[in-house]
Image 1 (tube, rainbow, N blue to C red):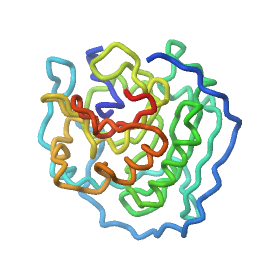
Image 2: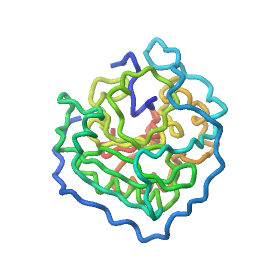
Image 3: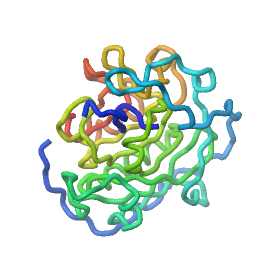
Length: 275
């Protein structure tokens, strides 16, 4: 279910750490922009994410297959895991990671960051259904407030996001299904195809709508069913484009975009570390 940047193959092919300043528990004041409208977009074709494991390639990734018609113009509805914002406005919170959230995350004592170096965020986002939802994310403590500001810009620009939740440990070894689209940050794992820690393992990278913005390296596309989104000329909702609101908001915060790399091309990936 995980994308290229946020996941690892079921048979894995498998940065320097810097201390993050402590932040006090805080909340971000909702924006003063007008409430988001709740016009519901037409429902997309039905598709159950994670229900169809893919046959494996020799490298352990799933086979890269043509995008199913149901996902070629992806508009799957958002399932609310947290209460949506009651007034339809953007709001965010920053807090130490609760024990229950940490227990269901990918954090383990072997990870390159201590739990005190991480923060738990809740942030409003607009789904493909046109409605406001509340997502969750774990990030490095030193970038927590920056991340909430960036996603406030995305909310105000009505940039659609399908899902935003904490990745679980079980997902790292689950059979690949190639259809995940979870926007997330902290995942304690190596970089794709490497042995060094990913910037995600420090909570210093975010993958935005990974199915709509796949990781591309040679003949490998992750998520594996996102082949149709390799064609960036066919612009669809949720795609990140050069110079768009997502690229500008992250760049203003000093983050770089993997879509500007030569190889791999990591269209979903925004990073505070450059990798």
